[in-house]
Length: 166
Image: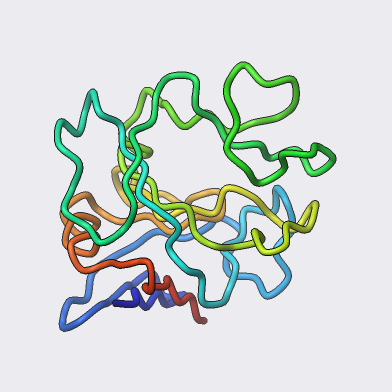
């Protein structure tokens, strides 16, 4: 089942409508690394990553599920061969740490943005993840409240997409 995300900060699936947070740079048809924008389009859900010390049992979902650990990261250095791919930390170039002090990455769904093929500089680490208190803007991801994320994961499959529109 697709998650429909609107630029007004709402998301919906089935008969549910709820709040979400988007990138601090707004929405973009021409995403660039570091612009803080959320890319417009239809992006497949690749898998669910979860933090097993905080989420004791993986949520029910039709996605492949993988636990993360303290050494997990995501490369966001456009010139690196592993740009927009998971890496093991420490890593010699710029990365996003997936194991965070806050709960934002306790549940992460990497979206199929800029991954087939990967184009250096067109944006990395575009995730569906948990929202900060107050739904503060993201760095380009889509974030949901934990209850809304769990409800969506329960119906999500590898055929599901996050569809982002103005």
